[in-house]
Image 1 (tube, rainbow, N blue to C red):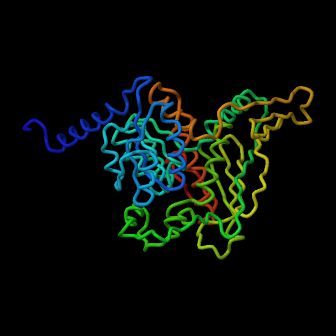
Image 2: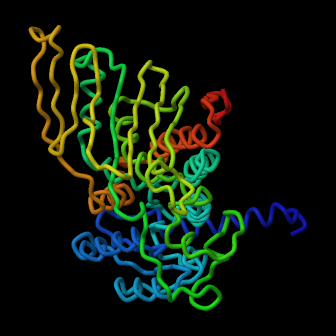
Image 3: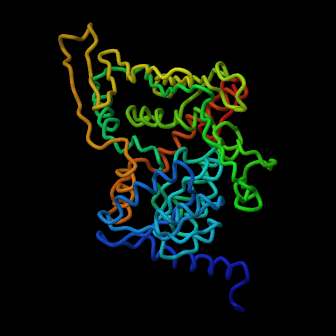
Length: 407
């Protein structure tokens, strides 16, 4: 101890502990059994668990632990998966045998849980959006790269090959110059939007740890709406932007080879569900200008589910995404030199495919379908719209400092 000061000793001990954890989670043979921990057992996480249970024997993995701060959900998850129940997610991360964790919590927890999981040497599947804010996303990207773990962001549509294939036609000039991309995600509701059931049996301090659930968010008095309908509130969600648009804009980012926008603006409001307790809008539209001179248009209403065409508009041809892949149709001015091209997709917007891709990345080094950088681009695209809407300002992207600024 005389030759090393206390700070160096603590750092060395921490590095040794981290290496020990990684020795389990990162050194995997092609056919070795993987072990998963699940953090969060609400609606989306339950869907993940149901799918994982179906595929675990075929894909050679098991669920070792599950975690939730609401006892009824935790009990249900443990029964479904056979995993050991944990009320505190950090205790689950201490289980050295766990190779990767599924983070299926509300988005205000995504960043901290991801950072802690990476520090524990765990690979990560994190539901979308990757983080709640742009600043959090920057920290996550830096941590993932430093820790050397794999991170899959839960934009499951990236397990459909349509978007990477579309980029080949964009890059080779088949579409000409793409100046506009349009895509939507709309729904219709009768009484209220995102009005998930409220469990009257939820009792903070008894079967629910409200303080732990709030975590990094502002401290609030218990409100069942905030727990069961958290997508309504800015503290935990970006509403349409982060729950719906992140699925769509990530597709466009992949298809056009985009990264960060130059600027963005969003409009909308509570136009239909005026009596809702929600803070977020039920009509929300966003326009993003990218450095390659392309505008991405995102459209949504929660009171009408008629879709607009999902298209890339080039001066030579239009690419339309469909349920089966995409179609490229030449513009009339270029009809003689162009031709109709049909792409039948492989893969799908599928949780099973998305998890299998992460497992193959851990075992065999397969490229991730939605890694942390693609997740980062999606967060910025969503966040620039949220900030524009809330401030009623045009928002700009400061490329050198990687942050949002007002115009």
